[in-house]
Length: 337
Image (cartoon, rainbow, N blue to C red; front, side, top):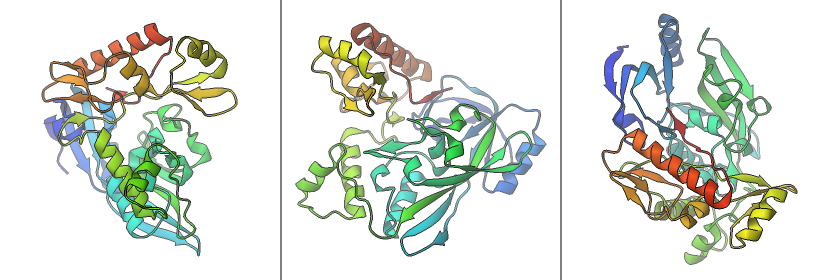
């Protein structure tokens, strides 16, 4: 294993930001990971997965450890369910497509989400009415401090909306090395009620959709709205949809009756951040090589040579404008480094 100095991370972050790691190494096994952590105890370390949920605003003055653990397998099954374990370095979308090819149900609504399997529990990723927590069983993680393995159950992960224990109490303490999902083998729960899935299926004259049909519909919708990071640097949705108390929202809604919202409980509503950003006039705007995508206001983009700081400045401008205009605070979903 070779540690590389002054290493460019441009190809390792989906924004395509040019930033350098003081040192860099890719690990391909848990044994390698353990060795690197043991041999570099005193060094500051930065754990890098698929690089799809971060904005680099500076060089990383640390040993960057890229988690490139590969393989997936069935570890248990019965007549109705299958338990599948994936290593952390597997590409998420490729893993989803593999489960669909096996006719395993549960992940199809999360097709085409960028990133790797190992980072999905950290963010409790989700799309079109489905989240990781719906199929998650457990994950194995190695402590950075003493290289001990710990298994986190679903309850121990403290999942919330784009939240988990790994973003809070256990932040920067563990490296997730594998994840186990419980998926259906039959009697799949096909979920087409969220977003434009049903419209996309209808457009293709599909009335009894399969897992593959739902996945294809989600892919088509995402491709129509979201730029491919390989062609235009981005990190998907940059902001979380704000969740408000109904009592607070009702006052805002009186002033802005056209505001979109979704009930998520008896006391809370979720407001689409993309709608707020579009209404504030940011959709499609460009500031040098940084900007807001023309088809989806939630997505900030790098048109070529934008710096992370330039993109961060746009995000702060958006946040301030939304608060001044609507009295609503929106938070970044992307990790700013």
